[in-house]
Length: 354
Image (tube, rainbow, N blue to C red; front, side):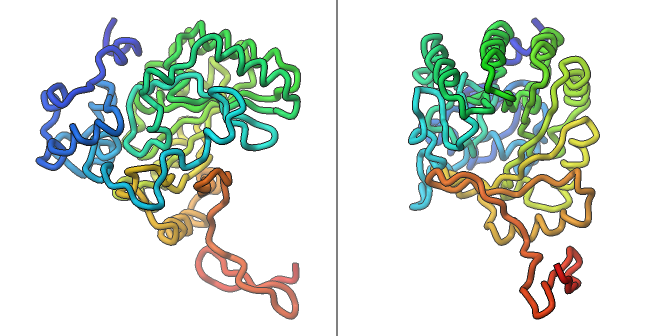
């Protein structure tokens, strides 16, 4: 196995402070925060993704996503272990069924890289959470008997840490359920380990067209020549429609120019920007949070100034399990005698009849 083999990347992940310091020079704060933060959440990064880090820049946007920091040890009153109440809506182990017509299925709790703002850090990387075959079968039976379901979202961890044969089996079972219209796969592997998108995986995916994938690019620096090659090959030969969801992160991408560059780069390799998430209120996430008012102002600078196809929906997944709500500038100012008063993206006002 070599650098370009995804299994080599997984087997050679950097997981300890000693190994990390052989690759990059840490600041005093990073070094001191490492061990205490790991008591809360594991650390791992692929050699590929670590190569994206600007070695002498402590403010590198990729570095800040993966290195443990002191802020993770702060637990604010509004932060909780399970901010989206995924466990509350879990009829069988490994399945969250919150919305009427769709369910999330956690088929793996392993990731190639552990993001420090992860909303599922309560169980991601925990070997005791690894689903077994019996749990898979119980989940499949739940999907078969709940005919209101139209979509299953494969998530984790990262579903693509599973072998091709396992993915082939699970997709085959899901596609055999008559009332399911679509299957969606949420993965960060195209970001952290794009060589996972192998030709053999494309052959599996091509069998189950139509298939949808949602990636998790947060910064334009994450899109490389390798990304482009593997992603575009998957679109062409795996016949997969690919979307992206980003998290708005303080000091990383909380800037309209950065988000615009990211979204245009995504479109150029065939990925449609889908969601821009307000950071979830998970334990230890406060350093990453951008105030919603500021997020809306950043979003205002995108809409109207850039092509609509490059603009995701800005959303907040409500803490406590309330689901997603749209966050947007208020373009409707008021109802008038003759109609409605609107403000456009430039701040100019227009009155319309309907």
